[in-house]
Amino acid sequence: MEWVEVRAENIEAAEELALDQLGVAREDAEFEVVTREENRLFGLKKTEARVRARVKPADLPPKTTNNRKRSKNNNKTQKSNKTAPKNSNKSNKNNKSNKNNKTKNTKPTQEDREPMPLKEQEDAVIEFLQGVIASFQINASASTRMEEERIIGSIDGEDVGLLIGPKAGTLLALQDITRTVVQRHASGKKTNRLSVDVGGYREKRKASLVAFTQKQADLVKENNEKVELEPMGAADRKIIHDAAAEISGVSSSSDGEEPRRYVVLHPSE
Image (cartoon, rainbow, N blue to C red; front, side, top):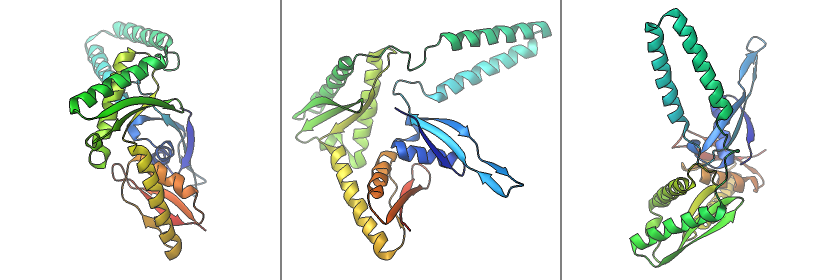
């Protein structure tokens, strides 16, 4: 996934704009701060923050785990520094820096990892989804397709609504579990991005949101007043923003904080 770069009044706002562009939740994205906001000319002029972001590869370990490990290592180092002599402190620091250098030099990056064959990934997805179908004893079939280097695993058939659930909660859980299954099959290899669809729900949801955006945009233009939509996930917000961009006389923005972040439609000048 390519990086996107956005600007805003501060880093937090820039990250939220980037999430809207990527159409993913915060835990599925990674960020790089290009420049921080700062006041210049005695506070009379403020520069914007610039942030780069991209969709996080599915098989990268979460950053919280690394932070915990680092904090544990830091605690151990602090304890050993209190009891060890001064000379040993220097040697410990040197050894630690040498180990860190070796780790940085030898640890492969995500791009350097051997990719898991695409067919093996698709086979793992289909095998798992077929198991889900058998467990729920429904008349359905599993398949996969590719969309811009993303694997889409699909379940289609009769009475599949149970696998979607209220507000697609069951579908999202099914998608997360499927990703975990593929990662276990990968054994550390690089995998493609993955989504799961049930009964064509995603396309129907997209069409519904586009039609909804058009109706709300008509109200905005008729009353010349902004309209605040209900809170929704990052993927749905992206659909709204894309649809609004195609409508003349209307612009869109996001407001609020997760999980209550929502889209606002404005009359454009």
